[in-house]
Each structure stands twice: as structure tokens, then as C-alpha cells.
Length: 169
Image (cartoon, rainbow, N blue to C red; front, side, top):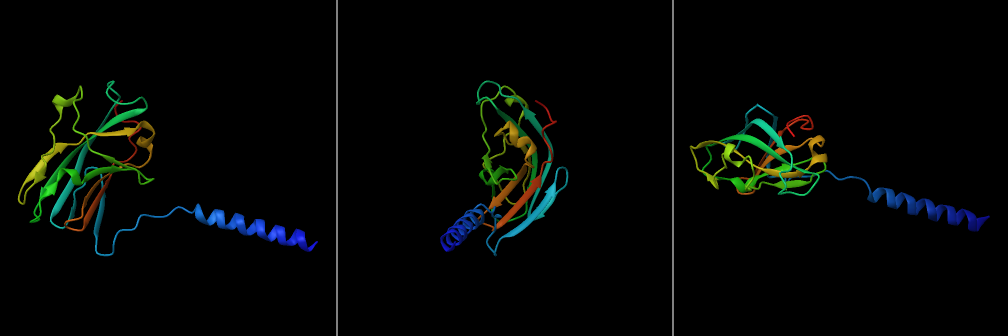
């Protein structure tokens, strides 16, 4: 009987240890980071930078990307009143599982209708442009958000894009 109790206790401890490791962790910003969030069509300002997403288009694969992937193309207005330039490389698309997708200015069939963001936006400039993100089609339902994350100014802005599964394609 004692051996059975010891084995039962050992198995329960192993199960508890395994379950504790599967607990999802939340993304934590360093304590010196500034953070702001908003939604589609609303301006979000932080550290002298204003980001507004006015539109989002979703395009099906044009044969240049893998099956099961789509193009997500937000129209982004950026105003920079900060001394530090805003880099186009500071923009990513992030889903609720913290998968990050980089912007690609690819040669796409619909490219003539887009205005690419310049490499940097200087102080006093306002730019309206597009980013092209290549994401799995399943991510359209994963609460995508456009993220501007600047390690130079220690600032992050997230703009929720909403459910994109009904947009375009």
C-alpha cells in the first residue's frame, strides 16, 4: 500500500509540474517603456508620434506567396513631432499569439495602387502610406494589430485592426 501511495504522489507531482510549464506567459515591456493603444480610424499619440490606421485591405495570394497566406495592407497615417525619426522598419503586424510579421514592400500585382512608407519620417513630417504584410490566412481572425515599436524612444503603439476575415480576399 505504501508503494502505491508513493507512486501516486510521484505521478501527481509530475503532472502538476508539466501543467505549470504550459501556462501561457504575457508579454512584458521593460518598465521604462511608454505604451498606448487604439483602434482602426482613431489617432493614437505617444512620445510625439501619432499613428492612425484608416483602412485595411486583404488580398489573396497572387502566386508570389505560399498557399494559405494572404497580403494584409493597412493604410497608415504617421505624424512625427519627436526629434527622433520614425523608421518604417519599426512597424510590424502582431497577432494575439504574439506572432510578428514584418512589412514587405514586394512586387505585387496591386502594387501600383500603394504608396510605400519612406525609410524614415523626420520631425514635423506627416506621411500617409501603405505597408504590405504577408500573414497566414488563419491570422485574420487572431486580433491582428499594427505595432509601432521604437527602442530609441522607448515607445510602443498598438492599433487593433479588428476581425479581418470578412475583408477583401
